[in-house]
Amino acid sequence: MAEGVVYIFSQDHRLYAVDRQTGQELWNFETNTVYSPASPTVADGQVYLVIDGQLYVLDGQTGREVWRFQLIPGANLTPVVTGDVVLVNKLFDLYAVQAPGL
Image (cartoon, rainbow, N blue to C red; front, side, top):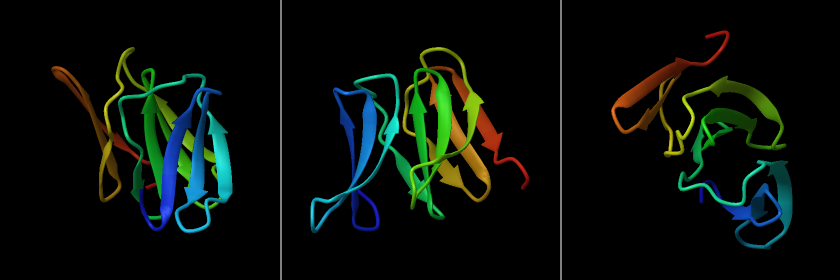
């Protein structure tokens, strides 16, 4: 949960953004998976999500994909955002991904 929005993975292969107070769906994003051990990270109005070896960055207002980056297969941990760099690890591998255009 961040900024009054709850993020929920569903069995219909989507990530839902739901208003915490009203329960109203704000948007949803198809993930092609029913489960991810990673929680979304919210920073600077964007939602960062790692699923099945892909780093997705979504617009926090609309849920539209802003950009994505291919990681190694099996990378499914919660990303950490620091400045313009997104950090993602899997066991002994660490990715530091800079957002395009920054």
